[in-house]
Image 1 (tube, rainbow, N blue to C red):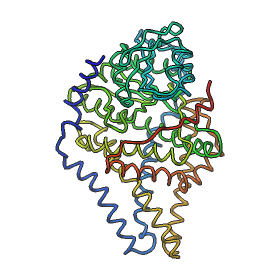
Image 2: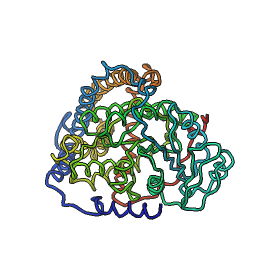
Image 3: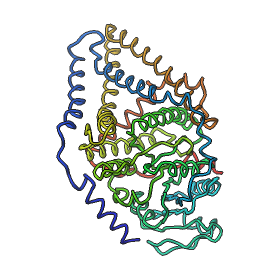
Image 4: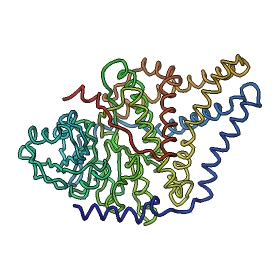
Length: 486
């Protein structure tokens, strides 16, 4: 195992642009630089232009967001003509491809029993389940020995299968981070397909069957994400964050469906992701130095495929569903989004040679330029809010009144998109999509002034992390699933 993980490190150093710095192409400079220059120009207009054009940065922000909504609207229209994908969860998959699950865990004793119960209750259970224990110092070891009959392994080694659960093994590691734990387990799990499942994520009963079915039916499929539903802790704060994150996840997964149709899907959620194991080994596994190791790995897989003439693709599998613990307080939410956005910037910078590159097809010419613009979206959003507040405080009704009309029109458009998304989500996922019509309308009305500001604030902190190289985040409390243990 040690030799193979060292080999993964060697492979990664030979192909990751983090180690092999590539020249920044002019097209990437133009796209990224153009977004920054446009912000500077539009921000300057706030001090020279009159009327609504003093809020030009806000107009650009709303125009960009509206363009993305139209794109998702068009790309998701096929879901109206499509029956629920729940059938995938019960159809037998073609062939007998072996599938293993890696659960990377550090101090997750409070949620591990629920996670494992959900895995063992699958309609098509996994052939192997490996607990990649990343140096836990809580009750994890006692739990695994007491409840599951595992014998304490030597550090750095895999245990024998559990007597009560023959597919379950325990890989005990020194603390080195999630990516290193995943790499160590990936090297030894020994199945053709591998699912990475966070210790705070509960798979629905047909989730693994749906993943088996998808990979068996598409040899080019190299990585896929399931559909996640957020679960927050009890109390007013938990209900608030679960409310908004439910709609956020709904829109995000519809967006992933839209980009998958363009062969441009890059975000494969590590909380519930499936990979062809050999492909992951071929590109050197997960990068321990990336803040979002799952996102970076997808870039490396796609870059490797183009370099070597492979037809690898990624997808979102509607029949593969899971519930995952989500932040339930402002502090936890901001820390999560700070890490996510900092890792997004990190990956965008490392893989800038792909931005606008026609060799990468629509991924290079459509998805990655959009992601380049997304790097500036929080700055546009926060600037828009600051300028509007400034106009209101200064009593500049010539600015505030038309801006208010534009915002009202945008809220109306967002409300229509919320309702459209709700219809599609139910069509796509069936009864599991427990989202209500009335609450969707209320969320559309107040989100721009509440949750959206928090998201942009977390992203701004992500910029700070990216620029300063911060890598310490503290521990994340599991308040959602821990309160709903099976």
